[in-house]
Image (cartoon, rainbow, N blue to C red):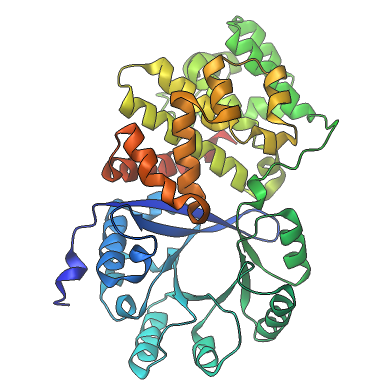
Length: 420
């Protein structure tokens, strides 16, 4: 291709990944969203100069580092489809998402056919009605995405039935409440995208599970500087915790020089700081231990925690305790959702320093600003316009942000899988 826009450097952009869940609420994939703080809200998704260069740049970073074992859904338009940008993409890991408004011309259909033969899969988004052009695209489409905000409930049901007859996989977008999820589940949807899973469903009088109580007891021992014998005794009372601890310290993520077979060795090798963050991760791991793989809440909380830690390291270099507090704020920021208990009540049970409480309850202070930035990036549609001001407030460039984002995604994929 001779178009110079295809090789333009992608500098002023940041990246968000929004989880896509299956019917069991396990992670299936991520929609990757690229945004430019210099351009308008939609420019990076629709303009060939931005789309192509950003995809190329992200691919050079390593899409596998961003999506781990999941699939990546990436928006492409007609110009991108006709380009040679796909040499950068791992076809077995990518779903190309085209819009219902795509011009259905013979050259575009021929190019889609060619890409299919090379192993690429396609999703069709922004579908609001059946149409002749849509029927032309359907033979090439694996996934149909219906946006719950853009379609009346009756039309969602009608379109879902139509596309299920065609053996298409249905994906519901903008699933923001558990009622949305339940309704789409009943309509036969296969996949769900939205943050309903991260919205607290407060249940008064709810009790923590025995495993969660065991983890909290251990966290209390670690933070109170109990001796290793007491910690080992507490770990032994929960067989799963003990096995996972041994698995973790013998994993490549920790890099032990020799095999560790005893819990006392494992506690010594891991150290108090790493032991505490492993326990924080384990709070989210109960559904994963039941066979669901890495749950979306676990992935979101651990990525958020690592992102805040890396931001703190970049902004307050040499202050390890600040980075540790930032990690704790990130991992605890979804604990109300996990427990189904109001955050104020949780903080009454798990004592934290004032800076952590201010961040979790009011998004105030240094750690609150970091948490606010992470949430703005995750909740792109609602808070996109707040990302650039948050970056300016922290004196952080988009280049730095993308670097830290990818590192956080990769850390979650590499470390958390061994932690559970």
